[in-house]
Image (tube, rainbow, N blue to C red):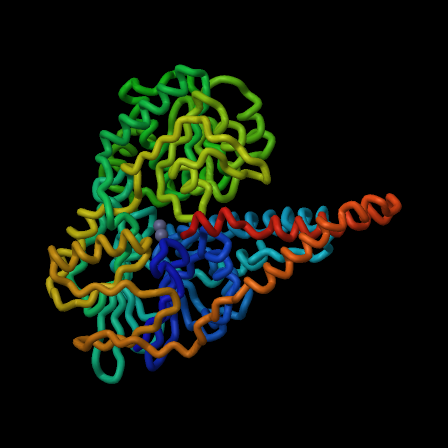
Length: 541
Ligand SMILES: [Zn+2]
Ligand SMILES: [Zn+2]
């Protein structure tokens, strides 16, 4: 059988691994690529997926970096089943609709910008609400530990990954030419002792393991430290009558933040008069799905629920669904805790809250999740002095807090512990879902401490897998893109500008209407130059 890495290869987003056996072609996950513009361009490259020839998808969990391209597949001819756990099925439906809405709004505002620049071309969204709706009937749900066979010679088992509600580790049993091979895909592995979630299940063995490595380079602080830090951030801005803005993914992180605030409140560490505003219609819906599937949550949450407590509720909790309610938050003076999405500040209402609060001394921006390269969130935590939001440069004067301990991902030691339980040290390990520097650190630790052989696959790399044999690279048919030589073009452009400069005197002596024509053409040229985002290029090096 062959595997091809269509995402989460030396990056954290875009999870998708296509497997071809002698009887089927299918994929684990169908995630959206997020980050800078060349990363996002991968979402448009439908040919590498060939969705018409995908028999089925197995989705590990609902996060958009694992499920966000499903509507794009349906739009381009995929019509097979999408297997997921029950909560994942419910969460996917609301997350994909939200994602389609973001795609549509972005396309509309880009089209308007084009029109203002005098261009008539219409920007089409990556996919529409209709495409997202078309995914729902394809979803087939399966429980944890309930082996099923989506195609001849293939058996699948979902196990609890402890990452977000319904997240699964995928055990894949493949019969091919009379021999059987077991592949394990970790999906995103949860942090042990995470609020709400059970701990990730230990897997007893595999022929090949594909393991996430998001936090392969560090350990998180403990829950207690993280709660203390959150309390400190709240106290800091409450005392200054400013807001505490928490960008949080709508699923899991928001609920974990509500739970954390519930704990602070229970211990008398949350000011009684500070409003807590959940400003994300998606997070409000996701919270309902958490309540519906409470049997998937951990023991602690269960005993609270049994005792009549609701750890996802607070006396001062307010929900803001409509745009008007959302806008009112920033028109109202005084301190408040605002939880809003998206978690990496690259989309959604959080951008409005950042625009209103980033520049305010005394306000707090509290990051509680992973910030991928190229996102505004990453730029802020890396100390950017200004951030561009809605075409406006906003100064960063608020206090920036990064609380890693709320992560829904296992830290370095937890990843090593989980991996260490696989008994066969000859099992090849593929590290996925991580940034290259992080993966190199984890890979050498794994080799040193556990003795596994580690491969870090590349984007679009193909590998042949045969149990007991060394994984073999599949020859890549596509040509390597040639670097473009821009130097002659730039020299020509410069000569033209120099020539214009030397003719300025002559131009000024022309009639006003002719001068205006020149000015107009030069302005257009400048607008084209503005589109080349040199700052982005530097940031990505
Ligand atoms: Zn995830
Ligand atoms: Zn992920």
